[in-house]
Length: 375
Image (cartoon, rainbow, N blue to C red; front, side):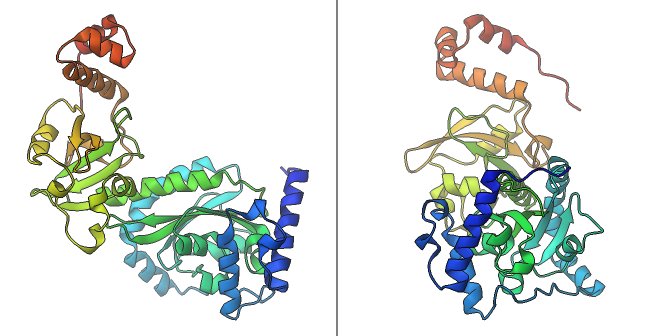
């Protein structure tokens, strides 16, 4: 179904055209002509200028790589771990964007496609050109795109039509987010692309959220004996927003996700050397393994050397609830939080109920429930 172009959409395309004229034709800054609308999009101008400095011109033809079958196989083999971690997320994305004329593309850190998923129109050569394993979609190859921008800026981006450098790629609209591995280094990016599609800037949020899911799966794919799911007190644990730290049997960090690296300053340099969990938490680390082996998964609070505290759910390797995308059942978490509140109140149920904002009867009722049978 064709959606009529709204006045706002038309004005947006006019803004893009004025910015292109300023930067690409007149050598001026886009902020000379459009200040407010482009305040948060200076990265587009930086990308356009890099393309100009490399000798590219907007009206040059774009020749997408011809990918030999042998090259495609080598790309698949070299990026197997990333592709495997991303595949469940790509399948979920395919369902989310099925009616939008957008599809998902996964690349490695060099902007080379390693997988694609979703409603890709096999009859449209513009779709086939970019959805082939092995094709180079980096900035140096095809100019300004969400793929090149996400890998250069290392942040989620949204790019619409003429915001692409080349005229030949102005049919695309795309959202992109970088992907960081368990050591904090960029390993690739996730892209959502539409062709002659309506502008959907909300896809920037979707692609960033999906990137977190892939990063968590990559972290959990590292060899480990213990998974620590972390969040600030008062936040529910068991979601993709958790900080995740994987430990070996001796307490050494084998991997962490972006959220954990933001919560724990001690992980900032994990890419340059080994980090032990004793450097992260201001308490003995050995009891965490005993907590994970306990039948009841109750969150505990961990003090940090900074004086801050984090809520932690310790899960042993092999626990299905520790796997990527597996949320701790809400009932289990609810009971665990109530039990912790009672412990914090030193057994005073009334005080615990008041802290939780529920009745004393509810506390008794929840704690008397039998846990569901597990397979």
